[in-house]
Length: 94
Image (cartoon, rainbow, N blue to C red):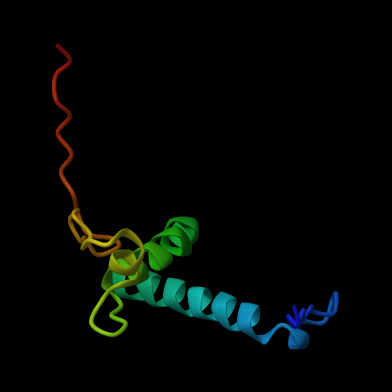
């Protein structure tokens, strides 16, 4: 079929620029979330999980978010910034 199969060299991150750039983007975004929220380093795991999620519902590509491109509709939930205070009131079981 004439497809090109590019592989990265093991233990050589220089040979896989796209993956390295994606990892760097998540690390930088996670640092920015922690700095902006004022939370301590102990919240790194939560911030690292939150960053790609927020990026997929807020970044615009040709007028659409990645979420809309994939699901065909805008994100229906609330957009809450990382570290915001939330009062959770569970409903009584019936």
